[in-house]
Length: 472
Image (cartoon, rainbow, N blue to C red):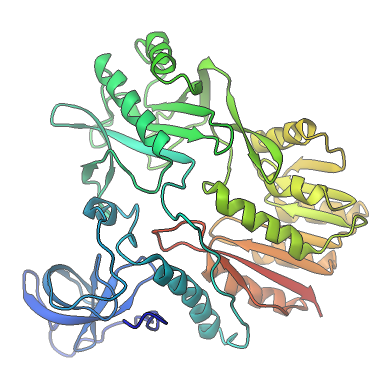
């Protein structure tokens, strides 16, 4: 693959069978990787039939072993690389590709940034919005060891509690000690906690039988403060030796200022349960973001890449183009990370979030930072938008930072009725962003400046994007 650009991202169509699938399980064959999927897997075509290959890069000729062949597509593993991409880099851990933790770790970072720009551009083109431009992806100087939060499963492995992750698309457990993309101190704390749990003979969770105690270990660390939180996520309410375990964690890790237990008794893939209790220390850690201080609790949503988040949020506020007289609505405000930055430049900011605990955190964060021009309310964003409109709130700018599913059609309609001059859309999913741009277009809003991708998650396929929609 040439260095100056990446191949077209795949537009995989269903393979139409003639009589038989052209490959079969356990077959070995040679093919050239022509594309890469949105999950970071290489794509080889055999008579038009797509085979997905973890770890393979576009332009590489590979000897493959077919693992699975369904009617529409199959999976294969590379057993020998006959040619390699000039953008391939060495030194990665195969477990990080297998688990999906760092599926692009073997791809040179400049190529990753080009890929993410291309990802956004191709989605625009597919939606017949190819007239919209996309800037170069804003990357990191050091694109590893950036995550400030880890949620690591524990399982019984070879007779003892072990931390690790699951093979992608399965429940096969792979022990891990170095996660590559996490703050190194977080990895160290996880290992210390693991060893303490072993010492006190705490049984790991058994997913099949729904037995055992420790399901996950969650660790958060303040990028600037260095404060660490440990959350033991348990199946049971009772954790035998809880006082001794929490004391030992703080003894061996003096930077841990919060040890908590989260109880999740359900047979579910959801990590956190509804109940969290303090075992030792505070129920939050503090950190800074663009000069503002935030209290971060166990269940707070807080961006996991602080270095890139500062760039992302600063740019979002810059694009809002505030001069001190504007009213701004921050939908999906969380604990107020964007709201507080907006409040320093606007006359008044209204934030809405459906999670009550997040709104309490947001109010406390406003108090900590001595900002009194913010109003935070619990509620559904689209309903609250209508409520504020009826109450005479007339926003000049609306800022949205929704989850991966994007905005609902009802929210977009409600937002448009308040007639803001501008909507600043911070997206973690370019597919739903493009869909929502089309929906805003139906309400009289259009994108008049290039979309701006930010690499919030290096070594993975995810990309954050800022789009600015203006009223026509």
